[in-house]
Image (tube, rainbow, N blue to C red; front, side, top):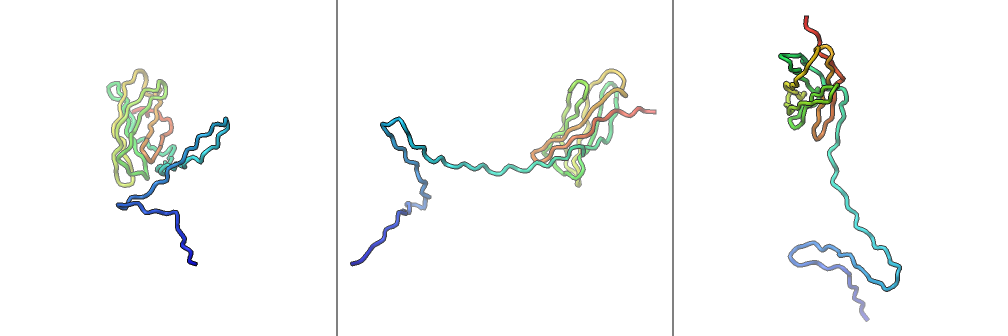
Length: 145
């Protein structure tokens, strides 16, 4: 007497991978048996490095009623981020695209109209990219002598 063992595997034709299909059973009774739900795993998202306080203000001056600020993000060299100048008092903003440099990201001239004394102005600069978040301390315009 010989035994023949059969396996429950089948190889699909054409090299396609077989995907199991969930079975659904209907019952006339009011109770139902929960079925196992497929597990969905998302692709890992890129990690975001926080550099809070590491946006450095390079220049800040008021010229012809316009606050003009330049800044940089040290130790980050990217060309896909956005630099945002924000006036603290009223929340107005201006943005520019960051420019990649040698171990630094530059924020070119960001400009907003202002009224009143330049010394009373408070502002900050934020930098946001897919991988980096950075923000300067609240700053003021240095008076010219």
